[in-house]
Image 1 (cartoon, rainbow, N blue to C red):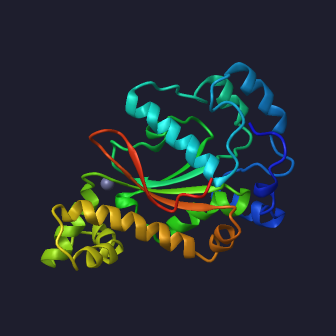
Image 2 (image 1 turned 60 degrees about the vertical axis):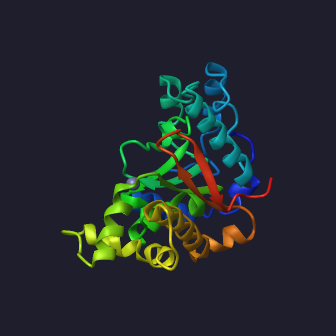
Length: 255
Ligand SMILES: [Zn+2]
């Protein structure tokens, strides 16, 4: 993996924070004493695009992910970083280059949609990719502790969670159990789209919800300073079940 210096990413490292976060989550992330020595064998054994140095800037990460998605769309997958060599290379520590916040929908697995492998992404999945404090903590983990430079909030076509929430809010009939908490989480998107007429209101709500979620993360107290100095970008995006293509909605970093 990217052995050599990662000035932007290391800039946000603080020993105490890393240690604390690692204890809390039970994860380990690369620190200044990280797994640089394990990088070379991986690159040598798997000379694919993604097995080369990982992207380190927000725009480079987005480019890498969209290139992977293009392979997914075309059916020309490389399946990088999925071999035993990669598994062994990251068994002690990890340093994913991206965070993807997506739905639990079985048809939208982030690692496949972006043609990535082990150790490449922090993948956070909830119904309708809604966030709440416990989820936001997981999203913050990479950017705050190891400078992960990109967060993608990925909504998707025909999202069942958003569709059910739309119906519940429109008809004022709460969903059973804690499912209603998902409906409440997407209420701002519902209220936004309710102000105008839409051919497909659920699809409009999916897109609005992704944009609102990304905007909220940009304002997050732990993430906002990183966004402000350009070390982190938060992108909203939409995944088409029909084509497999990821469309960036907003927040794309300047190259
Ligand atoms: Zn969904």
